[in-house]
Length: 508
Image (cartoon, rainbow, N blue to C red; front, side, top):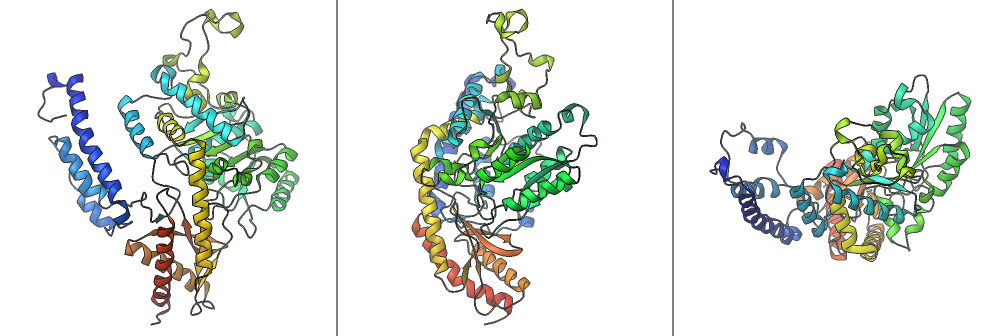
């Protein structure tokens, strides 16, 4: 609102007028940004020191008009942001969000519902129930499945591990683990959130057993089974097997059906981290990669990855339903009594004939007491595109990734690393001049090539480590990316590759 307004002017009418004023300006800013995306340098050349200086200064004593703040935002933040919505962004799993989800998220902010308790967010709660049902259906879970929306995959994986811990050590939630030494098993390519999760849950980082992977960077099931047998013989308690559907480094999908067999054989909790790759389920042509996911006790999805929902939005799904989550997290604060009146009859077993609506109170199904109503933007994205819309985008991106891999395989000096299973392509640039060079030199060439591309501003990609060696990691990430952008990237890598090798080796 106008900073000159007096307290008596802070009315609903004034609030509405301010939203109209700022909404027009914000729409202009966002639409102008979107229109410019294809021509913007993907990465800023600003240094960290430069940006710290830009925002230096004390908290202002007097307020600033909101339109001036939007102007400052456009000038000082938008201009030097990393433009991950660019069609030439080939980076991590954070694509351009769908416009309907962006603006629904703005409505979410205006409503400011706390989606932890039904009383504070009745419609958002009902919508969350519905989108969770959609996600359960997507993965092939039965009617009894349920879940909870989360801030992202890290929180979802933590909740899944908590359920696994409690299933293996029933008194852990109340008495602690004591002398119980649980083991969790995951591929060496699994997400770092598992390391943090076993730490926070008292299982311990040393009890996360990282299992080796094959040439496709998928977990070796035989090695997993041998690790479980060794731990049983040593008197340890295997608790959980984690499969990955779309690893961060290479996009690999573990053999989930085989992992489900191992979990069933040894009575272990089976969790699938499908934060990225879960969207394969939209495609009949590629969804077979997820075979076995419906056998998982729990599964992580990240709609802010391959479902194009704005940050942040994750989900944890439970095959056996809400009771598992409630057993793991329920508490009963006096100020959030969940019995609201209305006769349901004595069969429900609640005192005074009051219905128990606990499953609608999501604070009982996770650790958060304040939850953003992420169901709104997720619902808007899923309903806006529908299954067929997602199928078309996912399949087009997979086709583009295979095209990219073929083009680089045909380019001089580029060698594939692993294979393309999702929309991630990994390669190394090893021209004749450095093919016999030490590993450190070859790794330096990959970094130098990535930096040349980044500094040029015409594209952005990441590097990662696979088989102990640095590689270029390219993800066809955004729905704006077309074959022309892929061709431009290939041409850019071919042009900059020899220069990067010369930078490192000191050649011409």
